[in-house]
Length: 194
Image 1 (spheres, rainbow, N blue to C red):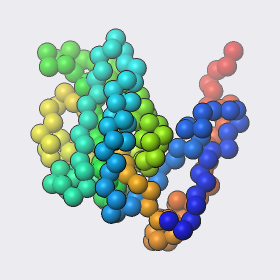
Image 2: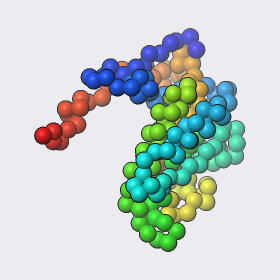
Image 3: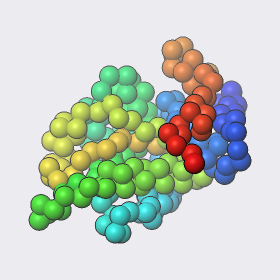
Image 4: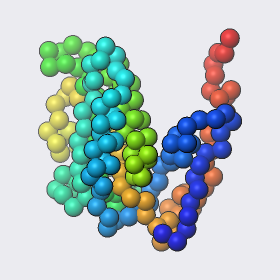
């Protein structure tokens, strides 16, 4: 990769380097296989996310590039995600068990699955992997492609792999990658701060 990207967030208060440096790319190396040890570590981090009453309501579907599972998962992605996400070394679906096998509702399951996704992405970054979480997928197509029970709700798809060459990306994608990282301030997010 000829361009060295420094995507470190400019924060208003100190945060952990692994958080400040993590960002969501859409440019993945389409040749490098997924680093299996790093992927295992990311899944292990997700396993240790906090959950209400320790129910651990998350489940994962892991589909490596070049497999039939990957093709099926790509088929469930929507719009622009189908253009860039297939280059990632793997696609990981985060699902929430929103209802037990006995029909008991799990009110916090999606929140807890989101925590598992966050732990996954932070650990992946610490292991040298790039990630991008997506909400642009057809849940029912994904369910059908993997015969997922109705009690499991697909929450996100995470593209994970080796960062690609941003210089070689098509211009529209390249501009998105190089655009400044922006967030509203903490004060703008606070509804109350007594």
